[in-house]
Length: 321
Image 1: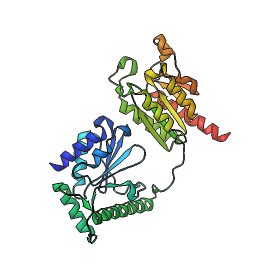
Image 2: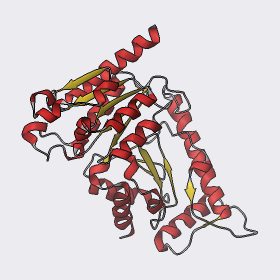
Image 3: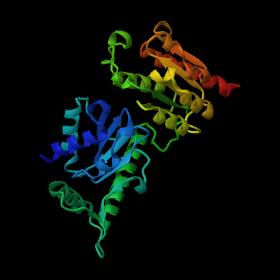
Image 4: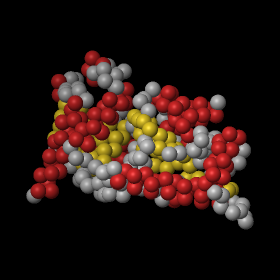
């Protein structure tokens, strides 16, 4: 079945079930929130049969556009594969959208008259069914118009119900959570030391506590590679207000990560799930601690919640000075 195959391919491109935190349906869009956006294969996602376009939603969300008469089937199949509670967004706060953010397959054809909405729906459904052609230029323009109109109507409906549209600027500091090697193996790796809660639970805790502490954005990043962690710290310069970092084993070895933290001069808190000071001697050495104003260890994943609260308090004190 086309819908089942499309859903399976989307899940693969997104990074598998372990990378999906939430899925929802809005208009013609399958919306997915992921744990690690860096592993999403965006090019492959846009080339899946039946996918008409893709766009990002915030720092860790993706939207995959399908035809109006097929998207529900794909969404139901995708939700079944993830096992997560599906959400239908009837009148959501739509993402700020511009045609340039939407990746649409286009095959130029001259002299064609823009189709009506009804004709467009039929065209989109045909594309999903046979997968033998792409949208021509007039069809792609009409798709963009339809999506813009649907977003505008959704914003108006949401605002009329007492909500605020996404065009309202959200104030508040931004926090970057960085996890190093093997932390993605939580729940599997030595549970007697690191606990039985999985990595997804850690990510959910970070998002939840960030919202509770008034952060406008919480980006979570995990890598087993030292250079990737250095890169993401450098990229945080003038983009994030605070960093919570658990470098894993790199805590005890990486001068490069220390230098990156010192270079960007972003307020940072060091977090460890286990009590590193009560373990092997080599784990008592921490290079990154020299660039952090606080260290939290031995609290399990709840240490991240404390770090979020302490970082928010620290940033607030800085604004008051």
